Image (cartoon, rainbow, N blue to C red; front, side, top):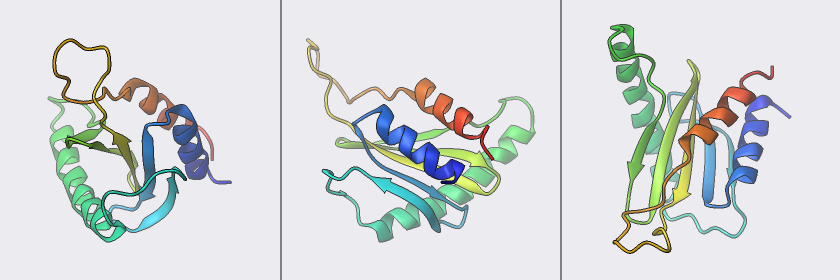
Length: 134
């Protein structure tokens, strides 16, 4: 099992609201993926591949900003829709992690909730931990 497969397994075990996890190259080619068995994918894989291609190009632009030194390292990008959040994280220069998370409203809230919080600290810890494997 590669470190990427371990990362996907750890992510899926971490939180049952993670619907889909993909590792792609910057060109949008899916190299590894994991989908929760009880989950219906809301967006066709062909469209997700197009998103991965765009994100690969966007990460190149984000890295150019990073190179200026004023902002620090680009860490992740979240796009939030009413029903899901789509997160991309650069793993290294050749791989991008894509995670789709349920965006169900928070319960026990007196005010209208605009979606589920994403525990990015824990997700980033899993990415960092998995990157220690070779």
